[in-house]
Image 1 (tube, helix red, strand yellow):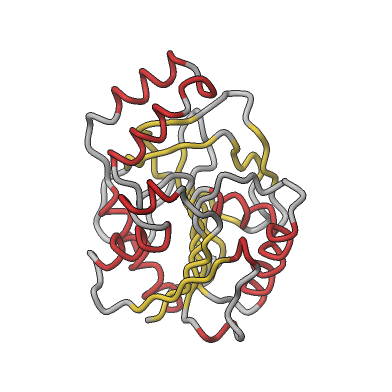
Image 2 (cartoon, rainbow, N blue to C red):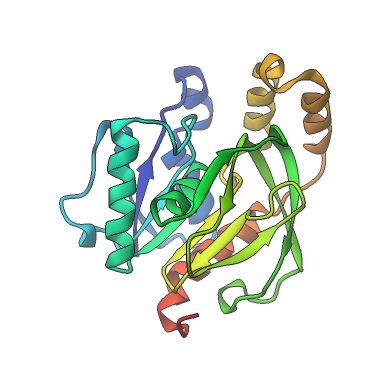
Length: 240
């Protein structure tokens, strides 16, 4: 299977040299589950796209510093591409910004949350179980760093997971779209550095709590398994 990674941000050089690009982070994560996956990266912030949507079997939209509701040319273009992928029922994964952008493009609502920043390690409750999950617990933990949230899901979207702070933390549409609010691709050390650098923006109290939460384990490999499982088995499921 060939996965097209739609890069929605470019990390600072110092971070990129140490941790890799968003695309490289996802390649490392997903290859740990399936080393037969093939990857192609597209810098959508530079309006770079495949010549044909069938150039890849599936696509993944990464996180970004930007908000989906910002008036930027590349964001509008990416929204249009999401609609195109959805129309053709191409498999599509959305991560953080990608989760939000997909929701917005397909009729949902994304807003800057009055609850403030979600940072650190977050626990999500699974509202339902799906065949692509396999045998799993009723909750999972994931690294997060976001102010925006999906406050209204698109029509026909199924809410998969969430918590009181972020009710719509994961959703599925049909057999071809799956999204997560969070960063399974992040290393703990990367997020720790990110949080420390945003202390003035986030606030010291929330930063200290977030840093403390990073001492506990996350379920990133489990989430990677779900993503690969969804990409491989979704067409075999019955439409919701």
